[in-house]
Each structure stands twice: as C-alpha cells, then as structure tokens.
Image (tube, rainbow, N blue to C red; front, side, top):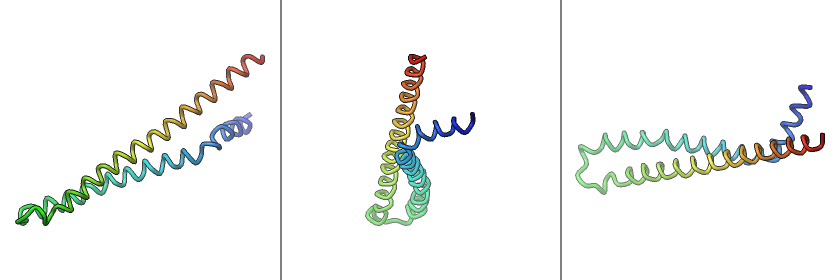
Length: 104
C-alpha cells in the first residue's frame, strides 16, 4: 500500500537526512556567492576610470577572487555530498532488491 511504501522510503532516507541537508545548504551558499560577484564587479567597473592607483581598488579584486573560490569549493562539496548520498541510496536499494529476489 501507499503508506508502507512511504515508510520504506523514509527508512532509507532518514539516516542520510543530515548529509542531504548539508549538501543542499552548501549548494545554496554557492549560489549566494555566485550572486554577490556581479555586485563587486560593478563597483570595480564603476571605480576603474577614476582610480589613480591599483591599490585603491585592489580589495575589490580580492573579494571577487574569494567569492569565486568560495563558489567553486561550496559547489564541489555540495555536489559531492548529494552525489554520494544518492549513490549510496541506489546501492542500498539494489542490495535489498537482490536479497528479496534471493529469498523468494
């Protein structure tokens, strides 16, 4: 029945909920870092014509580089966690199916 199916799915996903949530949060933080980059790039483009020395706008370059690195790192970690969780779920489902097929 429908409720027993949902209980089985819950039993499979429940031990991995923390990793799934962490992977999702990391992916959302990566998207946030990606959205902040154009703000600093716009400031850089706006200030570039009136800047006499590079040291006046150096911090904007550092912010852009830091946000870019954070985006890639957070995206990698989020994708890795979600992929690992989904792969382990598929493996566990296949293992249970093979056990149920052998027991019949």
